[in-house]
Length: 92
Image (cartoon, rainbow, N blue to C red; front, side, top):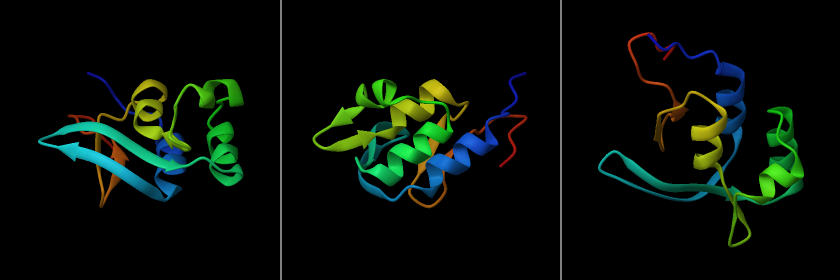
């Protein structure tokens, strides 16, 4: 069974103010935050470099859903909860 141990990373992602998203029917096309110093600093606390972050730039925004899927155990996002892991051993 998979267990989520990325709580700190998920808390960091969920601190960011989402400025745009497209999710429907359980599928997330994107979740985006402003590309600014504060958000980059938060992502660097997760271990990402500017080079890593630049791969997720979309129209002057950072597409953080792909970061969540690739760098954490998150498998869901909702506007109310943010990113989280939903599974048998989930911590949420």
